[in-house]
Image 1: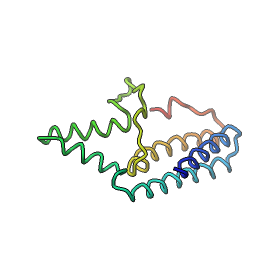
Image 2: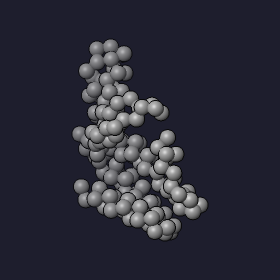
Image 3: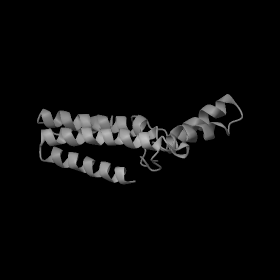
Image 4: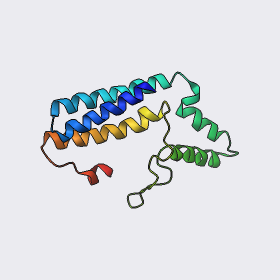
Length: 138
């Protein structure tokens, strides 16, 4: 998808601007990246085959009782996000292993995560501090 390649480049441009301490360029590229993710999510929503909801519903339909339905939905969600249960002391080594380019997943999972990351970068840049990777990962 052409827009995803553009989003990747804009993201890299934001990282380069951060490394060069270019506040104005960083904010421009960050905002552009966020808008591109929203636009891509909107385009993906035009096809039922690439909706997060379609995936989750198909998993729940396999259940024979409410307990299974809850478990199957959880399994379906974790498969396309973190792969298995993650706690503060147990982080998945398969992070984004089975990531999908689906509407609902981009705007409601990846975008908030990317926005948090960009926010930490912005704070470090504007306060002239080192980026604190450990804080961001919490």
